[in-house]
Length: 84
Image (cartoon, rainbow, N blue to C red):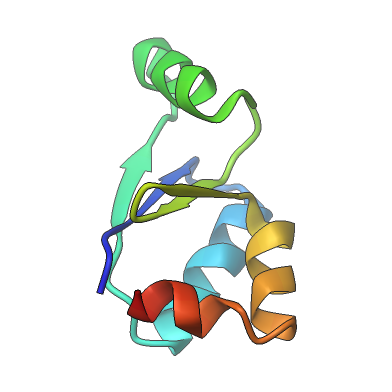
């Protein structure tokens, strides 16, 4: 299973939803909180090309945010990514 990395903030409802989906699927992930840490947020923005949270990677693939993660699930494409 590829590694999953998710950049988050503590009170972001989209971060909570994305983590809940991963938790329901039993997926282990590395959470990188960017609250009050401008250097981590800048690192995330540089890698993702976006400043909003969450930003999610499965292996080397940047999935995007919560909406994109849920869209992959609805389309039946999330499990294959997690199994690659």
